[in-house]
Length: 264
Image 1 (cartoon, rainbow, N blue to C red):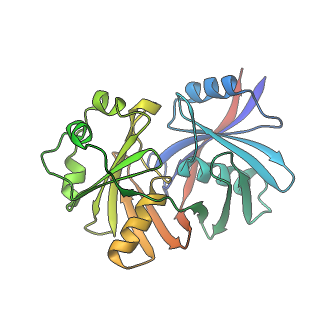
Image 2 (image 1 turned 90 degrees about the vertical axis):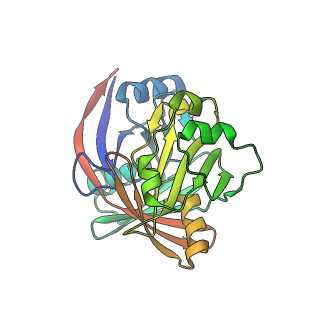
Image 3 (image 1 turned 120 degrees about the horizontal axis):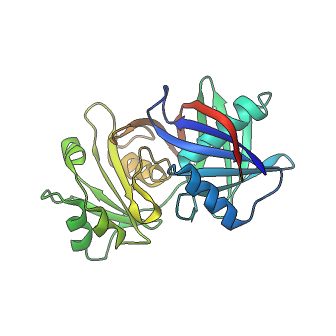
């Protein structure tokens, strides 16, 4: 069996930056076990699987270890595959997902605009000792938020975010929760990092899904609905975010780095 395969660097304007995702367009859905094995073979933070149906595509995402409920960069990669290669006559694409509803992505010049659900992150009522120990910094956060199986530690200095060296073994023990850290940015509205070792992703280079919670938080705090964000991973990535009611619009670019096929 031969599966068409794309690799994109999402939230990037050039190769070797942003977050790499694989996209597998399918004629019919594969079983979950096979999709999980394909994602593990790709060994990227996410693989998107597309199955056409009417005027939309069914979209599912797998990390090297498991299926996930929402993924920003792999959705952008899937949209780039459809709009730039599979159906270049289209200006937008509609994805149907199991856990996150309908996701719409459209072109805007060389960028892709993704219409995602707004995620609520409230102040955490759970003990923070395990999280703070795992993050490995003596600086205390000004707040710890919780939502969508994520802890978000809010700091007040960009350099604190850069200097964090987490203990991944301790972070794994927080499963099913992952950890994000964020602070006001020096040259952007806010910065962040994201750690999900229990899902097979030690540090995610650029994480669209967590910005569905980060953007509303910083929008309220900064008093603005349009925000420029940067994720401070080694590869790094930039996002433009808009908070619009119960939706968050994420904007960025994607670069094709490989196209071929996987034989299974």
